[in-house]
Image (cartoon, rainbow, N blue to C red; front, side, top):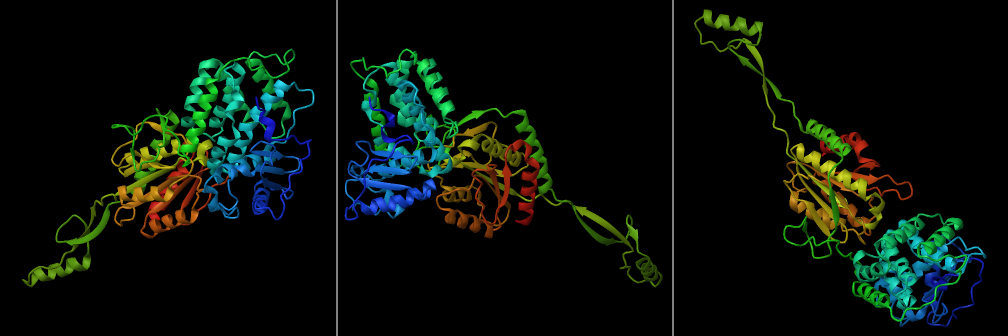
Length: 547
Protein backbone atom coordinates (compact mmCIF):
# COMPACT_ATOMS: atom_id res chain seq x y z
CA UNK A 1 0.00 0.00 0.00
CA UNK A 2 1.28 3.46 -0.90
CA UNK A 3 1.48 5.81 2.06
CA UNK A 4 -0.45 9.06 1.94
CA UNK A 5 2.69 10.76 3.18
CA UNK A 6 4.45 10.04 -0.10
CA UNK A 7 3.73 13.53 -1.38
CA UNK A 8 4.20 15.53 1.84
CA UNK A 9 7.43 15.50 3.77
CA UNK A 10 7.50 16.42 7.45
CA UNK A 11 8.95 19.70 8.56
CA UNK A 12 12.12 18.07 9.80
CA UNK A 13 13.13 16.92 6.32
CA UNK A 14 15.04 18.82 3.70
CA UNK A 15 13.99 18.88 0.07
CA UNK A 16 15.64 16.56 -2.35
CA UNK A 17 17.38 18.67 -5.00
CA UNK A 18 15.09 18.92 -8.01
CA UNK A 19 15.96 22.09 -9.79
CA UNK A 20 14.83 23.05 -13.26
CA UNK A 21 17.40 24.35 -15.67
CA UNK A 22 16.77 27.79 -17.06
CA UNK A 23 16.91 26.38 -20.58
CA UNK A 24 14.40 23.63 -19.76
CA UNK A 25 10.99 23.96 -21.43
CA UNK A 26 9.51 23.59 -17.93
CA UNK A 27 11.43 26.61 -16.63
CA UNK A 28 8.57 29.09 -17.30
CA UNK A 29 6.18 26.78 -15.47
CA UNK A 30 8.42 26.67 -12.41
CA UNK A 31 8.80 30.47 -12.41
CA UNK A 32 5.09 31.21 -12.90
CA UNK A 33 3.90 28.67 -10.34
CA UNK A 34 6.55 29.80 -7.83
CA UNK A 35 5.11 33.31 -7.96
CA UNK A 36 1.58 31.94 -7.65
CA UNK A 37 2.48 29.69 -4.72
CA UNK A 38 4.13 32.63 -2.93
CA UNK A 39 0.85 34.56 -3.19
CA UNK A 40 -1.27 31.63 -2.05
CA UNK A 41 0.91 30.65 0.90
CA UNK A 42 2.11 34.15 1.85
CA UNK A 43 5.60 32.65 1.93
CA UNK A 44 8.34 34.66 0.24
CA UNK A 45 10.58 31.58 0.35
CA UNK A 46 8.10 29.46 -1.62
CA UNK A 47 9.60 27.66 -4.59
CA UNK A 48 7.91 25.34 -7.09
CA UNK A 49 9.80 22.94 -9.31
CA UNK A 50 7.96 21.55 -12.33
CA UNK A 51 9.93 18.81 -14.03
CA UNK A 52 9.49 15.19 -15.12
CA UNK A 53 9.61 12.87 -12.08
CA UNK A 54 10.32 15.89 -9.86
CA UNK A 55 8.17 14.50 -7.04
CA UNK A 56 9.94 11.13 -6.92
CA UNK A 57 7.10 9.09 -8.39
CA UNK A 58 4.26 11.04 -6.78
CA UNK A 59 2.21 13.65 -8.64
CA UNK A 60 3.37 16.24 -6.14
CA UNK A 61 5.47 16.63 -3.04
CA UNK A 62 5.75 19.45 -0.52
CA UNK A 63 8.08 20.48 2.29
CA UNK A 64 6.04 22.75 4.59
CA UNK A 65 9.05 23.85 6.66
CA UNK A 66 10.83 25.34 3.64
CA UNK A 67 7.78 25.95 1.40
CA UNK A 68 9.33 23.82 -1.34
CA UNK A 69 6.90 22.16 -3.77
CA UNK A 70 7.66 19.67 -6.53
CA UNK A 71 5.19 18.89 -9.32
CA UNK A 72 5.59 16.01 -11.75
CA UNK A 73 5.61 17.53 -15.24
CA UNK A 74 4.19 14.29 -16.63
CA UNK A 75 0.80 15.62 -15.50
CA UNK A 76 1.19 18.20 -18.29
CA UNK A 77 2.02 16.34 -21.53
CA UNK A 78 3.47 19.34 -23.36
CA UNK A 79 4.98 22.50 -21.83
CA UNK A 80 3.65 24.49 -24.78
CA UNK A 81 0.07 23.33 -24.27
CA UNK A 82 -0.73 26.41 -22.17
CA UNK A 83 0.77 29.60 -20.80
CA UNK A 84 1.31 29.08 -17.03
CA UNK A 85 1.23 32.85 -16.48
CA UNK A 86 -2.39 33.12 -17.60
CA UNK A 87 -5.12 31.91 -15.27
CA UNK A 88 -7.54 31.26 -18.13
CA UNK A 89 -5.20 28.55 -19.42
CA UNK A 90 -5.71 26.41 -16.32
CA UNK A 91 -8.73 24.78 -17.93
CA UNK A 92 -6.82 23.54 -20.96
CA UNK A 93 -6.08 19.88 -21.60
CA UNK A 94 -4.58 18.20 -18.51
CA UNK A 95 -3.48 21.41 -16.85
CA UNK A 96 -6.43 21.44 -14.35
CA UNK A 97 -5.14 18.23 -12.74
CA UNK A 98 -1.61 19.56 -12.36
CA UNK A 99 -2.87 22.90 -11.11
CA UNK A 100 -5.07 21.11 -8.58
CA UNK A 101 -2.03 19.17 -7.35
CA UNK A 102 -0.21 22.49 -6.96
CA UNK A 103 -3.06 23.83 -4.81
CA UNK A 104 -3.11 20.63 -2.76
CA UNK A 105 0.57 20.98 -2.00
CA UNK A 106 0.09 24.67 -1.21
CA UNK A 107 -2.58 23.62 1.26
CA UNK A 108 0.01 21.40 2.95
CA UNK A 109 2.50 24.27 3.11
CA UNK A 110 -0.15 26.54 4.67
CA UNK A 111 -1.81 24.13 7.09
CA UNK A 112 0.48 21.12 7.76
CA UNK A 113 2.29 22.61 10.73
CA UNK A 114 2.67 19.50 12.84
CA UNK A 115 4.78 16.34 12.75
CA UNK A 116 3.98 12.98 14.35
CA UNK A 117 6.34 12.56 17.32
CA UNK A 118 9.14 9.99 16.88
CA UNK A 119 7.56 7.43 19.20
CA UNK A 120 4.20 7.26 17.42
CA UNK A 121 3.50 3.73 16.06
CA UNK A 122 3.58 3.58 12.23
CA UNK A 123 -0.08 2.54 12.02
CA UNK A 124 -1.17 5.57 14.10
CA UNK A 125 1.10 7.84 12.08
CA UNK A 126 -0.45 6.61 8.84
CA UNK A 127 -3.98 7.10 10.16
CA UNK A 128 -3.20 10.63 11.38
CA UNK A 129 -1.66 11.59 8.03
CA UNK A 130 -4.69 10.10 6.25
CA UNK A 131 -6.94 12.43 8.29
CA UNK A 132 -4.59 15.29 7.45
CA UNK A 133 -5.43 14.98 3.73
CA UNK A 134 -9.05 16.05 4.01
CA UNK A 135 -8.29 18.43 6.90
CA UNK A 136 -5.88 20.63 4.96
CA UNK A 137 -8.14 20.69 1.90
CA UNK A 138 -11.14 21.67 4.02
CA UNK A 139 -9.14 24.46 5.67
CA UNK A 140 -7.81 25.68 2.35
CA UNK A 141 -11.22 25.66 0.72
CA UNK A 142 -12.68 27.69 3.59
CA UNK A 143 -10.46 30.58 2.53
CA UNK A 144 -10.63 30.04 -1.24
CA UNK A 145 -13.93 28.24 -1.99
CA UNK A 146 -13.65 28.79 -5.74
CA UNK A 147 -10.56 26.58 -5.88
CA UNK A 148 -12.73 23.55 -5.15
CA UNK A 149 -12.93 22.71 -8.86
CA UNK A 150 -9.16 22.34 -9.10
CA UNK A 151 -8.80 20.31 -5.90
CA UNK A 152 -11.55 18.02 -7.13
CA UNK A 153 -9.70 17.42 -10.39
CA UNK A 154 -6.45 16.77 -8.51
CA UNK A 155 -8.05 13.81 -6.77
CA UNK A 156 -7.84 11.86 -10.04
CA UNK A 157 -4.04 11.99 -9.76
CA UNK A 158 -3.45 12.07 -6.00
CA UNK A 159 -5.56 8.97 -5.25
CA UNK A 160 -4.22 5.70 -6.60
CA UNK A 161 -6.68 2.74 -6.68
CA UNK A 162 -3.80 0.43 -5.78
CA UNK A 163 -3.65 2.16 -2.39
CA UNK A 164 -6.58 -0.13 -1.46
CA UNK A 165 -5.54 -3.31 -3.20
CA UNK A 166 -7.47 -5.56 -0.82
CA UNK A 167 -10.95 -5.77 0.68
CA UNK A 168 -9.78 -5.70 4.29
CA UNK A 169 -11.32 -3.52 6.96
CA UNK A 170 -8.20 -1.34 6.98
CA UNK A 171 -8.32 -0.81 3.21
CA UNK A 172 -12.02 0.01 3.28
CA UNK A 173 -11.45 2.55 6.03
CA UNK A 174 -8.47 3.92 4.14
CA UNK A 175 -10.62 4.41 1.03
CA UNK A 176 -13.26 6.12 3.15
CA UNK A 177 -10.64 8.53 4.49
CA UNK A 178 -9.44 9.31 0.98
CA UNK A 179 -12.82 9.73 -0.72
CA UNK A 180 -15.77 10.04 1.65
CA UNK A 181 -13.93 12.43 3.95
CA UNK A 182 -13.41 14.73 0.98
CA UNK A 183 -17.19 14.89 0.54
CA UNK A 184 -17.53 16.30 4.05
CA UNK A 185 -14.63 18.63 3.26
CA UNK A 186 -16.73 19.91 0.31
CA UNK A 187 -14.14 18.88 -2.26
CA UNK A 188 -15.99 15.94 -3.85
CA UNK A 189 -19.71 15.53 -4.44
CA UNK A 190 -21.87 12.67 -3.23
CA UNK A 191 -22.43 11.59 -6.81
CA UNK A 192 -18.67 11.26 -7.32
CA UNK A 193 -18.33 8.55 -4.68
CA UNK A 194 -21.59 6.65 -5.04
CA UNK A 195 -19.99 3.34 -6.07
CA UNK A 196 -17.10 3.41 -3.55
CA UNK A 197 -19.52 4.29 -0.76
CA UNK A 198 -21.56 1.15 -1.47
CA UNK A 199 -18.49 -1.08 -1.47
CA UNK A 200 -17.05 0.53 1.67
CA UNK A 201 -20.36 0.29 3.54
CA UNK A 202 -20.69 -3.38 2.58
CA UNK A 203 -17.32 -4.17 4.17
CA UNK A 204 -17.40 -1.86 7.20
CA UNK A 205 -21.09 -1.70 7.98
CA UNK A 206 -23.02 1.48 8.65
CA UNK A 207 -22.19 1.68 12.35
CA UNK A 208 -18.43 1.43 11.90
CA UNK A 209 -18.47 3.85 8.96
CA UNK A 210 -20.46 6.33 11.04
CA UNK A 211 -17.82 6.14 13.77
CA UNK A 212 -15.00 6.75 11.27
CA UNK A 213 -16.90 9.68 9.79
CA UNK A 214 -17.19 11.28 13.23
CA UNK A 215 -13.39 11.06 13.52
CA UNK A 216 -12.59 12.69 10.18
CA UNK A 217 -15.25 15.37 10.74
CA UNK A 218 -13.60 16.22 14.06
CA UNK A 219 -10.18 16.22 12.39
CA UNK A 220 -11.38 18.81 9.87
CA UNK A 221 -11.93 21.23 12.76
CA UNK A 222 -8.51 20.73 14.39
CA UNK A 223 -6.07 23.64 14.49
CA UNK A 224 -3.03 23.53 12.21
CA UNK A 225 -0.56 23.10 15.09
CA UNK A 226 -2.53 20.70 17.30
CA UNK A 227 -0.36 17.62 16.94
CA UNK A 228 -1.71 15.96 20.09
CA UNK A 229 -5.28 15.94 18.84
CA UNK A 230 -4.33 14.64 15.40
CA UNK A 231 -2.30 11.79 16.88
CA UNK A 232 -5.11 11.00 19.31
CA UNK A 233 -7.59 10.88 16.42
CA UNK A 234 -5.23 8.58 14.52
CA UNK A 235 -5.14 6.22 17.51
CA UNK A 236 -8.94 6.35 17.81
CA UNK A 237 -9.15 5.45 14.13
CA UNK A 238 -6.98 2.37 14.68
CA UNK A 239 -8.78 1.18 17.80
CA UNK A 240 -12.17 1.63 16.13
CA UNK A 241 -10.92 -0.75 13.44
CA UNK A 242 -9.89 -3.27 16.09
CA UNK A 243 -6.17 -2.47 15.92
CA UNK A 244 -4.23 -2.07 19.17
CA UNK A 245 -1.21 0.14 18.28
CA UNK A 246 0.70 -1.02 21.36
CA UNK A 247 0.67 -4.68 20.28
CA UNK A 248 0.34 -4.18 16.50
CA UNK A 249 2.26 -1.00 15.67
CA UNK A 250 2.89 -1.83 12.00
CA UNK A 251 0.53 -1.35 9.07
CA UNK A 252 -1.88 -4.28 8.58
CA UNK A 253 -0.88 -6.88 6.01
CA UNK A 254 -2.80 -7.15 2.77
CA UNK A 255 -4.27 -10.59 3.31
CA UNK A 256 -7.25 -10.45 0.91
CA UNK A 257 -7.07 -11.87 -2.58
CA UNK A 258 -9.17 -9.32 -4.47
CA UNK A 259 -10.34 -5.77 -4.11
CA UNK A 260 -13.75 -4.58 -5.21
CA UNK A 261 -12.96 -1.26 -3.55
CA UNK A 262 -10.15 -0.56 -6.00
CA UNK A 263 -12.52 -1.20 -8.90
CA UNK A 264 -15.10 1.24 -7.51
CA UNK A 265 -12.40 3.87 -6.96
CA UNK A 266 -11.52 3.57 -10.64
CA UNK A 267 -15.20 4.22 -11.42
CA UNK A 268 -15.21 7.24 -9.10
CA UNK A 269 -12.09 8.74 -10.68
CA UNK A 270 -13.55 8.19 -14.15
CA UNK A 271 -16.73 9.94 -13.01
CA UNK A 272 -14.71 12.98 -12.02
CA UNK A 273 -12.73 12.94 -15.26
CA UNK A 274 -15.91 12.68 -17.33
CA UNK A 275 -17.61 15.45 -15.37
CA UNK A 276 -15.01 18.24 -15.56
CA UNK A 277 -17.64 20.99 -15.26
CA UNK A 278 -17.78 20.30 -11.52
CA UNK A 279 -21.55 20.25 -11.20
CA UNK A 280 -22.81 18.33 -8.15
CA UNK A 281 -24.80 15.16 -8.53
CA UNK A 282 -28.38 15.57 -7.26
CA UNK A 283 -29.30 14.13 -3.88
CA UNK A 284 -32.71 13.30 -5.33
CA UNK A 285 -34.42 13.60 -8.68
CA UNK A 286 -35.80 17.11 -8.59
CA UNK A 287 -36.50 17.26 -12.31
CA UNK A 288 -39.31 14.73 -12.34
CA UNK A 289 -42.84 16.02 -12.95
CA UNK A 290 -44.29 17.43 -9.77
CA UNK A 291 -40.83 17.87 -8.24
CA UNK A 292 -40.07 20.57 -5.72
CA UNK A 293 -39.05 23.27 -8.14
CA UNK A 294 -38.80 24.32 -11.76
CA UNK A 295 -35.24 24.43 -13.03
CA UNK A 296 -34.31 27.18 -15.38
CA UNK A 297 -31.56 25.35 -17.26
CA UNK A 298 -30.25 21.85 -17.86
CA UNK A 299 -27.41 21.63 -15.32
CA UNK A 300 -27.58 19.63 -12.11
CA UNK A 301 -30.25 21.06 -9.78
CA UNK A 302 -29.69 22.66 -6.42
CA UNK A 303 -30.93 20.39 -3.64
CA UNK A 304 -32.45 21.02 -0.24
CA UNK A 305 -34.21 19.41 2.67
CA UNK A 306 -37.65 20.59 3.78
CA UNK A 307 -38.60 21.07 7.42
CA UNK A 308 -41.31 22.72 9.45
CA UNK A 309 -40.48 26.24 10.65
CA UNK A 310 -39.68 26.55 14.33
CA UNK A 311 -41.56 28.89 16.64
CA UNK A 312 -38.83 31.55 16.52
CA UNK A 313 -39.05 31.65 12.72
CA UNK A 314 -42.86 31.91 12.81
CA UNK A 315 -42.72 34.78 15.30
CA UNK A 316 -40.08 36.53 13.20
CA UNK A 317 -42.25 36.18 10.10
CA UNK A 318 -45.22 37.64 12.00
CA UNK A 319 -43.20 40.68 13.09
CA UNK A 320 -41.82 41.27 9.61
CA UNK A 321 -45.33 40.93 8.14
CA UNK A 322 -46.54 43.72 10.43
CA UNK A 323 -43.61 45.94 9.40
CA UNK A 324 -44.21 45.38 5.69
CA UNK A 325 -47.94 46.01 6.02
CA UNK A 326 -47.15 49.26 7.79
CA UNK A 327 -44.77 50.20 4.99
CA UNK A 328 -47.42 49.50 2.35
CA UNK A 329 -50.27 51.23 4.17
CA UNK A 330 -51.28 54.67 2.94
CA UNK A 331 -53.32 57.10 5.05
CA UNK A 332 -56.61 58.29 3.48
CA UNK A 333 -56.26 61.39 1.34
CA UNK A 334 -57.80 64.47 2.91
CA UNK A 335 -59.38 67.17 0.75
CA UNK A 336 -61.45 70.22 1.69
CA UNK A 337 -64.49 71.26 -0.33
CA UNK A 338 -67.12 73.99 0.08
CA UNK A 339 -70.78 73.22 0.67
CA UNK A 340 -74.05 75.11 0.87
CA UNK A 341 -75.22 73.23 3.96
CA UNK A 342 -73.78 71.67 7.14
CA UNK A 343 -71.90 69.73 8.40
CA UNK A 344 -68.58 71.51 8.28
CA UNK A 345 -67.01 74.77 9.36
CA UNK A 346 -68.93 77.97 8.76
CA UNK A 347 -67.03 80.61 6.82
CA UNK A 348 -68.33 84.02 7.93
CA UNK A 349 -67.54 85.97 4.77
CA UNK A 350 -69.21 83.36 2.55
CA UNK A 351 -72.26 83.34 4.89
CA UNK A 352 -72.62 87.17 4.59
CA UNK A 353 -72.32 86.91 0.83
CA UNK A 354 -75.00 84.20 0.71
CA UNK A 355 -77.37 86.34 2.84
CA UNK A 356 -76.85 89.34 0.56
CA UNK A 357 -77.50 87.26 -2.55
CA UNK A 358 -80.75 85.99 -1.10
CA UNK A 359 -81.83 89.53 0.03
CA UNK A 360 -81.35 90.96 -3.44
CA UNK A 361 -83.10 88.04 -5.12
CA UNK A 362 -79.91 86.93 -6.92
CA UNK A 363 -79.13 83.27 -7.50
CA UNK A 364 -77.24 82.00 -4.44
CA UNK A 365 -73.70 80.94 -5.41
CA UNK A 366 -71.85 81.38 -2.13
CA UNK A 367 -71.01 78.22 -0.19
CA UNK A 368 -70.60 79.17 3.47
CA UNK A 369 -69.74 75.72 4.76
CA UNK A 370 -66.40 73.91 4.32
CA UNK A 371 -65.93 70.22 5.08
CA UNK A 372 -62.98 67.80 5.06
CA UNK A 373 -63.46 64.69 2.94
CA UNK A 374 -61.31 61.59 3.48
CA UNK A 375 -60.89 59.30 0.51
CA UNK A 376 -59.14 55.92 0.88
CA UNK A 377 -55.90 55.51 -1.03
CA UNK A 378 -55.20 51.96 -2.27
CA UNK A 379 -51.99 50.40 -0.95
CA UNK A 380 -49.31 50.30 -3.65
CA UNK A 381 -48.55 46.98 -5.30
CA UNK A 382 -45.42 45.35 -3.90
CA UNK A 383 -43.19 42.87 -5.70
CA UNK A 384 -40.43 41.02 -3.86
CA UNK A 385 -37.88 38.69 -5.45
CA UNK A 386 -35.67 36.61 -3.14
CA UNK A 387 -32.38 35.16 -4.42
CA UNK A 388 -30.47 32.60 -2.31
CA UNK A 389 -26.77 31.97 -2.93
CA UNK A 390 -26.14 28.20 -2.85
CA UNK A 391 -22.44 28.35 -3.77
CA UNK A 392 -19.80 26.66 -1.65
CA UNK A 393 -18.72 29.85 0.12
CA UNK A 394 -22.14 29.91 1.82
CA UNK A 395 -21.77 26.39 3.24
CA UNK A 396 -21.25 27.41 6.88
CA UNK A 397 -24.18 29.83 6.73
CA UNK A 398 -26.62 27.81 4.64
CA UNK A 399 -28.96 27.11 7.56
CA UNK A 400 -29.43 30.69 8.86
CA UNK A 401 -29.56 32.09 5.33
CA UNK A 402 -32.24 29.56 4.32
CA UNK A 403 -34.16 30.55 7.44
CA UNK A 404 -33.86 34.25 6.59
CA UNK A 405 -35.10 33.61 3.05
CA UNK A 406 -38.17 31.76 4.37
CA UNK A 407 -38.97 34.52 6.87
CA UNK A 408 -38.80 37.23 4.20
CA UNK A 409 -40.79 35.20 1.65
CA UNK A 410 -43.46 34.26 4.20
CA UNK A 411 -43.82 37.81 5.50
CA UNK A 412 -43.89 39.42 2.05
CA UNK A 413 -46.58 37.03 0.83
CA UNK A 414 -48.75 37.59 3.89
CA UNK A 415 -48.32 41.34 3.49
CA UNK A 416 -49.95 41.09 0.07
CA UNK A 417 -46.82 41.21 -2.05
CA UNK A 418 -46.16 39.19 -5.16
CA UNK A 419 -43.07 37.12 -4.43
CA UNK A 420 -40.82 34.48 -5.95
CA UNK A 421 -37.82 32.69 -4.44
CA UNK A 422 -34.90 31.39 -6.48
CA UNK A 423 -31.64 29.68 -5.55
CA UNK A 424 -28.55 30.07 -7.69
CA UNK A 425 -25.29 28.18 -7.89
CA UNK A 426 -24.10 26.17 -10.87
CA UNK A 427 -27.69 26.53 -12.04
CA UNK A 428 -30.79 28.51 -11.13
CA UNK A 429 -33.67 26.76 -9.37
CA UNK A 430 -37.12 28.28 -8.84
CA UNK A 431 -37.97 27.31 -5.27
CA UNK A 432 -41.24 29.22 -4.76
CA UNK A 433 -43.08 30.41 -7.90
CA UNK A 434 -44.99 33.71 -7.93
CA UNK A 435 -48.31 33.62 -6.10
CA UNK A 436 -47.45 30.74 -3.76
CA UNK A 437 -46.81 31.11 -0.05
CA UNK A 438 -43.89 29.03 1.31
CA UNK A 439 -45.13 26.64 3.98
CA UNK A 440 -41.88 24.86 4.87
CA UNK A 441 -38.32 26.02 5.27
CA UNK A 442 -36.03 24.68 2.57
CA UNK A 443 -32.53 24.27 3.95
CA UNK A 444 -30.18 24.72 1.01
CA UNK A 445 -27.17 22.50 0.47
CA UNK A 446 -24.67 25.21 -0.32
CA UNK A 447 -22.14 23.12 -2.22
CA UNK A 448 -22.29 24.53 -5.75
CA UNK A 449 -19.00 25.13 -7.52
CA UNK A 450 -19.87 28.62 -8.72
CA UNK A 451 -22.69 31.16 -8.61
CA UNK A 452 -24.78 32.46 -11.52
CA UNK A 453 -25.98 35.66 -9.93
CA UNK A 454 -26.46 37.66 -13.12
CA UNK A 455 -28.60 34.92 -14.68
CA UNK A 456 -30.61 34.67 -11.44
CA UNK A 457 -31.34 38.42 -11.60
CA UNK A 458 -32.45 38.06 -15.19
CA UNK A 459 -34.78 35.18 -14.34
CA UNK A 460 -36.26 37.10 -11.38
CA UNK A 461 -36.83 40.06 -13.69
CA UNK A 462 -38.57 37.81 -16.20
CA UNK A 463 -40.87 36.38 -13.54
CA UNK A 464 -41.70 39.55 -11.60
CA UNK A 465 -40.87 42.42 -13.99
CA UNK A 466 -38.43 44.00 -11.58
CA UNK A 467 -37.18 46.45 -14.20
CA UNK A 468 -40.67 47.64 -15.17
CA UNK A 469 -41.76 50.88 -13.40
CA UNK A 470 -45.11 50.87 -11.65
CA UNK A 471 -45.28 48.71 -8.56
CA UNK A 472 -42.89 49.06 -5.64
CA UNK A 473 -40.15 46.51 -6.37
CA UNK A 474 -37.65 44.95 -3.99
CA UNK A 475 -34.89 42.45 -4.71
CA UNK A 476 -33.68 40.58 -1.60
CA UNK A 477 -30.30 38.85 -2.07
CA UNK A 478 -29.10 36.33 0.51
CA UNK A 479 -25.37 36.01 -0.19
CA UNK A 480 -21.83 36.84 0.88
CA UNK A 481 -21.31 38.58 -2.47
CA UNK A 482 -18.08 36.78 -3.36
CA UNK A 483 -18.59 36.08 -7.04
CA UNK A 484 -16.35 35.05 -9.88
CA UNK A 485 -17.36 38.15 -11.89
CA UNK A 486 -18.15 40.91 -9.37
CA UNK A 487 -18.14 43.60 -12.06
CA UNK A 488 -20.92 41.83 -13.93
CA UNK A 489 -22.86 41.42 -10.68
CA UNK A 490 -22.50 45.14 -9.96
CA UNK A 491 -23.70 45.96 -13.48
CA UNK A 492 -26.83 43.85 -12.96
CA UNK A 493 -27.54 45.57 -9.63
CA UNK A 494 -26.98 49.03 -11.09
CA UNK A 495 -29.28 48.25 -14.01
CA UNK A 496 -32.14 47.31 -11.66
CA UNK A 497 -31.43 50.32 -9.42
CA UNK A 498 -31.79 52.72 -12.33
CA UNK A 499 -35.29 51.38 -13.04
CA UNK A 500 -36.37 52.05 -9.43
CA UNK A 501 -35.95 48.53 -8.03
CA UNK A 502 -34.52 48.58 -4.50
CA UNK A 503 -31.96 45.94 -3.49
CA UNK A 504 -31.78 44.59 0.08
CA UNK A 505 -28.67 42.49 0.73
CA UNK A 506 -28.70 39.98 3.61
CA UNK A 507 -25.07 39.02 4.28
CA UNK A 508 -23.78 36.37 6.72
CA UNK A 509 -21.95 37.59 9.80
CA UNK A 510 -18.44 36.27 9.26
CA UNK A 511 -15.39 38.06 10.64
CA UNK A 512 -12.97 35.78 8.79
CA UNK A 513 -14.68 36.09 5.38
CA UNK A 514 -16.53 39.45 5.31
CA UNK A 515 -19.23 39.89 2.72
CA UNK A 516 -18.44 41.91 -0.37
CA UNK A 517 -20.26 45.24 -0.57
CA UNK A 518 -21.96 46.41 -3.76
CA UNK A 519 -23.16 49.87 -4.67
CA UNK A 520 -26.89 50.69 -4.74
CA UNK A 521 -27.71 48.08 -2.09
CA UNK A 522 -28.89 48.20 1.52
CA UNK A 523 -26.77 45.70 3.44
CA UNK A 524 -27.94 43.96 6.61
CA UNK A 525 -25.51 41.57 8.33
CA UNK A 526 -27.41 38.52 9.56
CA UNK A 527 -26.25 36.15 12.29
CA UNK A 528 -29.49 34.79 13.73
CA UNK A 529 -32.28 35.82 11.32
CA UNK A 530 -34.94 35.51 14.02
CA UNK A 531 -33.29 38.32 16.00
CA UNK A 532 -32.57 40.58 13.01
CA UNK A 533 -36.15 41.27 11.96
CA UNK A 534 -36.19 44.92 13.03
CA UNK A 535 -33.13 45.93 10.96
CA UNK A 536 -34.33 43.77 8.06
CA UNK A 537 -37.80 45.30 8.23
CA UNK A 538 -36.48 48.86 8.56
CA UNK A 539 -34.06 48.32 5.68
CA UNK A 540 -36.92 46.98 3.56
CA UNK A 541 -39.08 49.99 4.47
CA UNK A 542 -36.29 52.45 3.67
CA UNK A 543 -35.54 50.69 0.41
CA UNK A 544 -39.18 50.79 -0.64
CA UNK A 545 -39.58 54.40 0.44
CA UNK A 546 -36.58 55.51 -1.57
CA UNK A 547 -37.38 53.36 -4.59
